[in-house]
Each structure stands twice: as structure tokens, then as C-alpha cells.
Length: 341
Ligand code: PBG
Image (tube, rainbow, N blue to C red; front, side):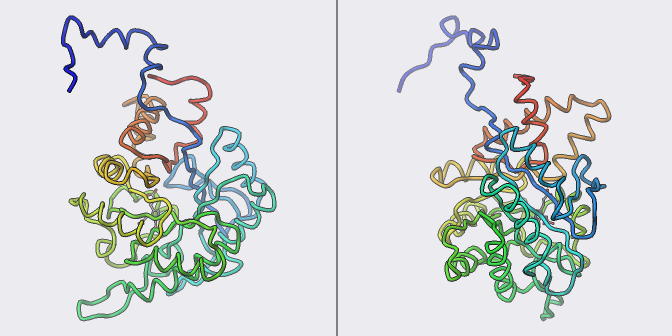
């Protein structure tokens, strides 16, 4: 073991005294090519409309020039990966619009591919909560404990959605429903349909979190009865997250995810330390985004600095890529050199 000297041989301030030296020794660097930008396509509108609960983010019609402009603008800022969410024109018990050939996400995928070719990396959120009239990520059935969300019948539906997203041009599907075995079933379905090149980014450790509030407003996807605690993870557990991640890797996930990010930095670090070989995404969720926006609006803190500090912390904790609603603004700050460190 080397012994590290103390003062006066060690003067840590020497490496902090001006920006160029701080940049030389910085352990973490933000890079927009590691951002994934969420996008909401909505089948009920003709023109882009700002969302109410996720300020600064818009709904786009699935086949609109504005959608292409938005993606192109992000790509000019070096953001090349997008996570697509759909708001369907109708909801039902099974969420059948989710795997419809002309569903909103499928239409958007085909349109983006026809306009931008293979340049953008297109991830699709694969879930039912935005498509079902009950707002759950799986199918509710009656049991001796009352209404429960049935695991295995939901998996069959996820398999259909995955194949329909792949057919429409998705590069990666991102199952977010937290059903057991979802990655296995989706991998098999994709392989059996000839989509061995389509990957899976699994929401492996997704917690039952209050920080999804603004997103559920955008998607109109809040559960109409009960909550999601019987399928999403308990915030008290970290080792369990590791087990979820390992299971997903064994089932065939190419990328794993911890979600949310900020209150779960320890979980990001735990996963990175134990499975450094596996690409890890962190989802900086809607409530985390809105907290900074609102605090900045109230003059409580400087929003730009807060965004970069938070994203840097998520990267430092061990995330290889960050899904964030701040992506465009952060990329603009990085480009302009207005970095507060
Ligand atoms: C759907 C899903 C959720 C988010 C992404 N996919 C939330 C939920 O469980 O209701 C949350 C995203 C965010 O808050 O930004 N299962």
C-alpha cells in the first residue's frame, strides 16, 4: 500500500486553483452522447402541445415535421438516443393500442425512420399503463386477495408489443412494467420473429416512487385503483436491486437501468461495482426534473448549475448513460462552455 502524504506535502488546493487544472484532474465528464432524451408522441393532436405537468416538454403528433425538427435539433447537440412514449387515441382493459400496427409509437417509429434513417438510436418504452383503462402496467384479475396484477398473462402481451415495436423500427425496447420474467419472454419473442439485432434496455430496478408524479400526468397513466407496490420495488431495498439486475442480465438484457436516479445513487453505485461489464442506465425521472425547475423558478437556486451538478452526480455514481428531461438544456450548456465546475 502506498501511504498518501499529509499536509504540508499534500496541498489538495494546488489541483483546484484554476479551471484548466480542475478540468485535467476531473474524474467525471458529461457527454451528451450519453444522454437519452424522452419524447412523447400523442395520437390525439394535430400540432405540438406543451404538456401541463412536465413543463418545457411537448406532445408531438406521431407524423409531424415538428417531431423531426425536435429530434434533429437534439442530434445537432450530439444527443443521438431517444426514448419514445406514446399516448394512444383510446384505452381498454388489455391496452390493445400498445401492439397495434398503427399504434401511436409504431407510427412515430416508421415516420422517424423514413425521415432520418438509421441515425437516431430509438428506444421505446414498453408498458401498458398508458394504454389500459385501469392504468396498471399489467392485467388486473380477481384473486383471493382482491384485484391483483397478473404476471404471466401480461408477459404474453409484452411479447406482442416488443415485436410490433421492432417491426416498426425500434433499435431497443425498454420494458418498464416490472413483471417477473419480462426480459426472457421479450428476448424469445424478438428472436423467434427474426429480430436478433433488436436489443433490450430493461428497467431492472424500478422503485415504487413518488417522483413519477409529473410523468403520470403527462401519460394519464396513474393507476385508477390501488398502486404499483405489488410490482415496483420497495424503496427500502438495495441488495434486491442487484438481484433484479442479475436476473435481467441472465434473461438477456443488453442494458440495465436503475430508476429513479437521485434518491437511488447508492443503488447505481452498487450495481456498477458488482457488474461493471454491464452497461448501466439511470433514469433521472419527471419529479426530479420538476423539482429543479420549480426551485429555479422560485429563485431558490440556479437552475443551470443544478442541472449539471445533478447529472454529473448520476454519472459519478456509475451510470454509463442518463435518461433525462434536461438533456437538451444540458447539452446546450455543455456546448456553450457554461459549465460551473
Ligand atoms: C411506466 C413508466 C413510468 C415512468 C416511465 N415508464 C412510471 C410509472 O410507473 O408510472 C416514469 C418516468 C418519469 O417519472 O419520468 N411504467
